[in-house]
Image (cartoon, rainbow, N blue to C red; front, side, top):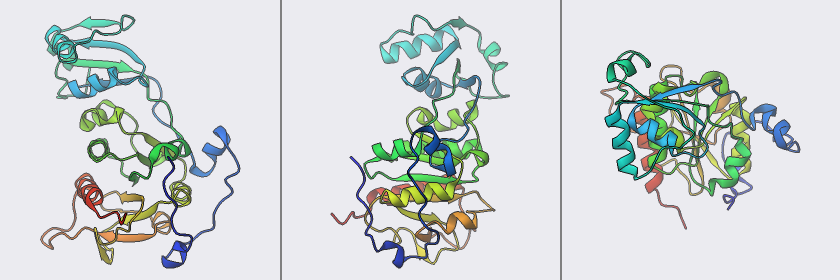
Length: 285
């Protein structure tokens, strides 16, 4: 079900700049032009580790698993918990914990499981919007720390977010570190990488979304800035914040009402708070 459209007079009520772009292109050409669809993702083989990340990847039909390494105890525990067998075509090597430790990042908590797999298929924004049903969407501008992106994906899964959107050049690729931080949510939340965030925000407006930028300089306190209707939350990196051109494509700028004893919150913490507030707001229905 497509999300409800915003009132047609909404642009006159906010400081919105920019005309609508031609959306006549469809298919891959339409998706790639101006950020309406997928940007670059990881290439080659991705190495995941940790029980939640590996289990989620193995149960994700969109994930192409290549090879599994693990201790006998960890693999058996995983199978017992799910009352399932590993795919017959998946190569499995049993190994000692110390050997697994040499296969992953230094001091990474592999929990006895390491998996090589292909990157997830690229997603087009238009396809995600078709399935969103008005659910919240999160946009990250220049958030490059894989720990933060992974933690935000985890919050997105917790609050039933329809998709995460990032710009291909200013976001981390899929990785074991990101997947471990996401605790399985990398396999659950659609992640769209676009070429141009401003164009993606225009597409969200056309789909009926209110675009709310979260910034400490915002005049309105969150969640009072939230209107009824579908919400797209825009968050920027700590320090640099959201770029001006991205802010200009938002309908409102809001701040989290935190104590003056601290200047700002970690972006993943801010995302979790904002998503909770969004999830409990009155809908006006």
